[in-house]
Length: 384
Ligand SMILES: Cc1cc2nc3c(=O)[nH]c(=O)nc-3n(C[C@H](O)[C@H](O)[C@H](O)COP(=O)(O)OP(=O)(O)OC[C@H]3O[C@@H](n4cnc5c(N)ncnc54)[C@H](O)[C@@H]3O)c2cc1C
Image (cartoon, rainbow, N blue to C red):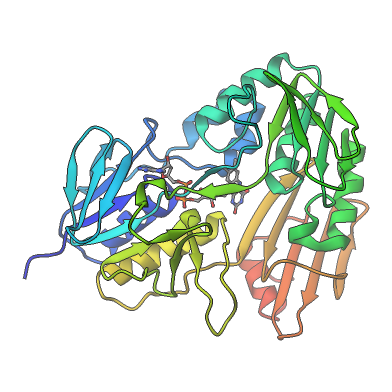
């Protein structure tokens, strides 16, 4: 029997991880990756960190899959025909597959009205370069959305000495990390030069080109640049008519299988369908994209996945501080244990959840991810 041909749509973290894993697992058949971006695959987390600081980091982002005999097509997929097992790209080519892995990730959610120009977002390398060049000339900034991405962008502004105001309905990072960490991070962010503004509803972008926001109640804020960090939307337009996608993305099970035989999905484009372990859930983080890329590759080959399609490690850098988190999110209430000193930006915190699992957070404290994983499993971290 000849080895199946595998088509991966999306040349980024989940897609290249799947491609690499197919070869690691011994798949000798054809593998083709279709990618929409001319840059090829690159790592996104540095875009809101080192890349905003200066151009020095741009060359270290590449995630290549050279030497693995993988065909690369740089043209966006625009349609899929699941009954004929084909995908069509913008340049008019048609690609047949035996197995398809959907890894098209997500794009930034925008708040601008149709036709309103000048909204800045941060999802791609091009977005990051544009934002970096705008930061060089800006005397003031507004960031809409105080999740991890918004806080990283606001931190980049403050680190350059640009007065920055971050606007959200919730407190900074509260949705993900809960009230205790949010309060500590807010205090630290304000001392770092970030003004945190809480609103009672959605902020509206004003001006064309955009030069500010109007808050519910009528308060108007203006700035040289306005960056929207209001979440992401799964890239599923090219799957129209296939029934594979809904507003949450492409639903998968624990083997990364969709509801259509031979079609798998991985990364930010997906959500895990409701099952005994919980409701439908999206988790658009780096370590999940890696875990799902590996699981999807194993499933394509009919092999049992080596691990689950999720990984509960997450990190961010806010106001000069690195936070590493291992364990279930979101967090609620206060930690059950604190070692170190929050005020000095160096602490190790533990949350024990009612189901017996733990979440461990290194708040500015240098700890390896392995050490945090061991800690989350209830063992000592001091020797690691
Ligand atoms: C600025 C930024 C900072 C981040 N920081 C962190 C962090 O600190 N920690 C963390 O855990 N996570 C972070 N993340 C999230 C993490 O980067 C993502 O979870 C990860 O990139 C998801 O990988 P992916 O391969 O699923 O999707 P993506 O990285 O979105 O890649 C999908 C690829 O598919 C391509 N594509 C889309 N549509 C098509 C089409 N029709 N045809 C062909 N190709 C297509 C896209 O162009 C893209 O290249 C960050 C994300 C961003 C944007």
